[in-house]
Length: 518
RNA sequence: GCCAGUAUAGCUCAGCGGUAGAGUAGGGGACUCAUAAGCCCUUGGUCGCAGGUUCGAAUCCUGCUACUGGCACCA
Image (cartoon, rainbow, N blue to C red; front, side, top):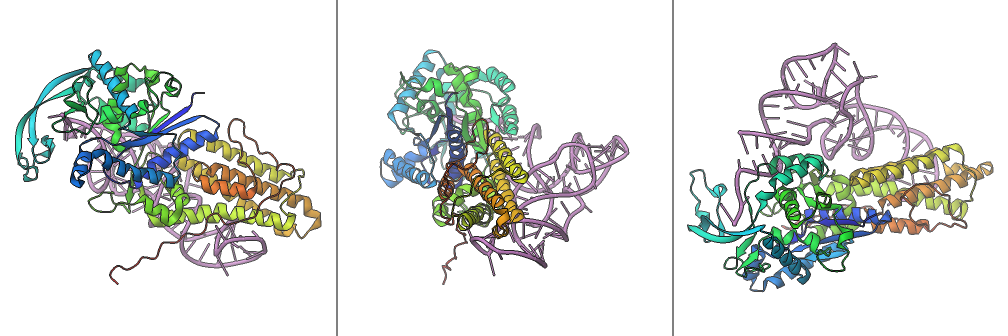
């Protein structure tokens, strides 16, 4: 089987990361870890988009070089990914020489095959804002408002990509490849939108206006603009066009994980058309996994209202485990979700602490108390055999759900498994069995079954909360259960002795808010 | 203007033609291995509104409302 290639959007290095950035990377990370757990080779690519006007302007404001500014912001992303345990295999920074070379090779090739041309555009231009204006910027009276300053008519030469040449192909492709985009309603949206997109794509900026970009190899007065730089990271960092690289086995991407904001037109129209122009076949087109947005207490997250959630602060307050778990648990794949710290605590304290953590704790405690950590291997009574079969069913469901990128559903399966195990503790009441010598065998069987359920739960938690799940397995003195291929529950290994229980999910509370006015 | 999505218990959501469901929060109970966790029972909803199709609609159709998003326009 080909390696699993998963990418995220590359983040723009103009502003520090917010909760949405963190969500997307955790989402990709969970899928990557799951695939590794399945025994599949994984190439997980993420990175930063460092070029462009905003970076150039921000750097100028601070009186430093754009590279320095971009590096400084990139550092914040890198540090956050380290905190959150994002297990990427390659880092796509668009100022890397490898990437520049790939972009220029592709541009040269497309130009030679007449996919690019130069033309003059004429339009209203705001000198103050350094941008062309469209009808959108006109006020109700049809005039451009005072915020634009002096507006002049300007002619500007630029390079264009013959996007219109692809429209027929794209239409057919979207008809044929029904699963190009997940979730499916996004593909419907894309189809509707794509049919309306006409004209070609401007891919350059004159250096007079923007210097901070990749120079066009055939016209050095221009740099590449946005998409012909940023999108290409998906292939350049996978080794596209590099002799002896593993690109041919890696491509196509199993998931481009992106937010709903950049599906149309960038990833849904430009990107497949660019690949098509480069000569990629329909079978070599990637798959897009589109996630929703997080709002904050019902309000849209926006920098202007200042309600930006800082993921670094969250990770510090509540820990990586709780944050990763909550974000994956509470967002239904593809849909928007509402962020609140109360819900984060609720999910962590009830499902992880009271549910899984307590199961591990009470199981280990009883095993040590009644059997010195080593339950004997005995024939299984029917009810416990049925319990283990149910665990197998849960693990199978989990695999199906994770294969479909339904992480929230996979977590729910884990929670169900834990609840079933906690119910088994009550119904079998090991503390009563321990008092009755005739029930000795049954006690051994119950404890072993509970240990195996705890292992199964930790195994399912592993991609979502690797640190916590690893710690549980350490306490259980077991390796993760095998969930690739045919799934079975094996009995405890010969000479098994469990470890000591230590709470893995300490109860979290809202921090006491200091009254600033006091 | 066009095209979607969402609207079900306080909260998060499932159900998508056949007597309203889960988790969580609230109430009660029995237990004690455990992070005062867990388990059992329970309160709680004219399924956004109005019509229609049907023996029967949360579920299908039409209209409306609210919220969210996409496109028409980004050179």
